[in-house]
Length: 122
Image (cartoon, rainbow, N blue to C red; front, side, top):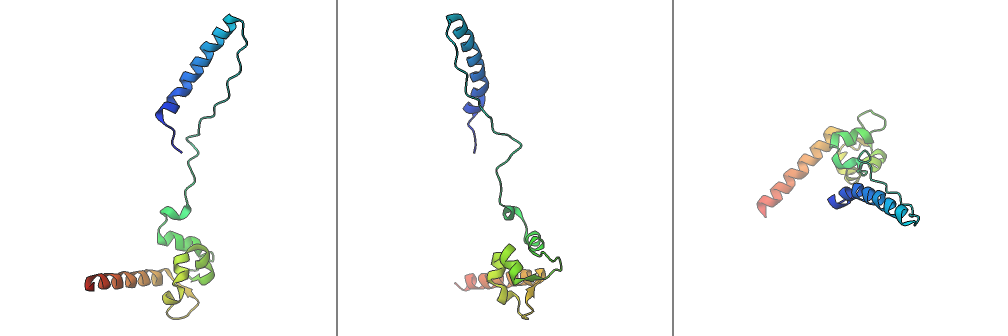
């Protein structure tokens, strides 16, 4: 959420206005009503960002590979790399039951080459 400049500048002005108004009320004999508390958003608390948004494939692979053995099983892929899970059988050409980061990179390279070839023939 982004606050407008007006909102940010009006908080101190509001405080001054309430202070001056309280003096006027005291002089007029009326009792001022307390101002509602205003809580400014904290600059230290940014909005949450999805973790996968800015992670590289290598980082996502490392995070999904919970056994830290360099072998990503289908279950691990489903939990951490859904796109790899969808193409798991095509990536795991040897039917080992796991894929490596090198195999994923090779698969992605093959797919890009096929798309490029299709676009060139188009």
